[in-house]
Structure formats: C-alpha cells, structure tokens
Amino acid sequence: MGEKTEKNLKEAFAGESQANRRYRFFAEKADKEGFPQVARLFRAAADAETVHAYNHFNAMTGVGTSIDNLSAAVMGEHYEFTRMYPLMIDQAIEEQSESAQTTFEWADAVEKIHYELFQEMLKAVKEKKALANEPYYVCPVCGNTVLGHAPDKCPICSTPGSRFKKIE
Ligand SMILES: [Fe+2]
Ligand SMILES: [Fe+2]
Figure 1: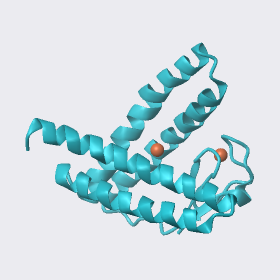
Figure 2: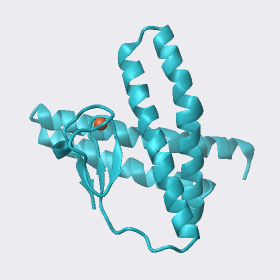
Figure 3: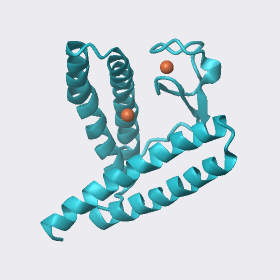
Figure 4: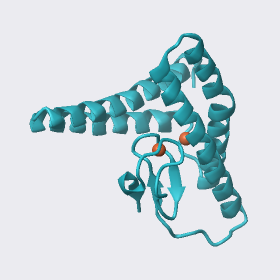
C-alpha cells in the first residue's frame, strides 16, 4: 500500500471513530431536548460511521487474533497511563484548566486498571486457563471498570455503585 493511502486510512479511521462518538453524544442531547427523530438520525449516522471506521481499519491492519488484540490493548493502555495522561495532567495544571485536569486524571487512573485487566486476560488466554464467566461493571462518570460486582462507591470518583453499567 502507498504511503499516502496508509496515512489517509489512519486519518479516516480516526475521524469516523470520533464522528461515531460525537453523534452518540448528540443523540443523547436530542432525546433530552425532546427531538426523538433528531436522536434517531444521529444514531443511524453514528452506526454508519462505525461501518466506515471498521472498513477503513480492515483495509489497514485488519483485526488480529484475540491474543494479538489483547497485546495491542496492553501496549496502548500502558502508553496512556504512563506517558500520555501524566503529561496532559501536568499541562492542564500549568494552564489551570481544572475540568481538563479532572477528566485526564480519571482517565489516567482507569487506563491503569484497563492495563491490568488486559494483561491478566492476555496471560490467561495464552496459558489456556479457564476464564471467568462474570460481568464487568463500568462507572458512568469516570469509566472505572470492575470485574464481578460494582463497588458500593466508585473509588475514583465516588459515584454510587448502583449507577454502574453492567456489561454482560
Ligand atoms: Fe482504557
Ligand atoms: Fe467512577
């Protein structure tokens, strides 16, 4: 594949992935404002952007085996909590951007948890161990991710465990 096309695929994948998230947030807002049809249009477009993102991704590297994908996740999360977010937190403090500081700090704390969860899972899959068959719970405020059952209160952001989203 040519260099330009490879770069374009990366860029298009990033853009479509972001559009998917953005449209989902816009759909939530439209629902709150009492425009269900606007919400539907945003959701439909969001799904279509996911199709584009998937196709672009496949034209690049494609989706690997689960062992490949877990390894990639371990590396990505490690980079985020050891390098990317610490630098962003410092810069937010330097520029006195408190809301950015908070969102970076929450993400930094959770990426470390993701790193540990992915690393443990990678090891278990590689060693062909029996895997847990339990739900995960995700904090709707900071993204904290917990296996098995929700805590009484999120240790990162204090949100009550009853608000955590169960991932079957
Ligand atoms: Fe993460
Ligand atoms: Fe939380």
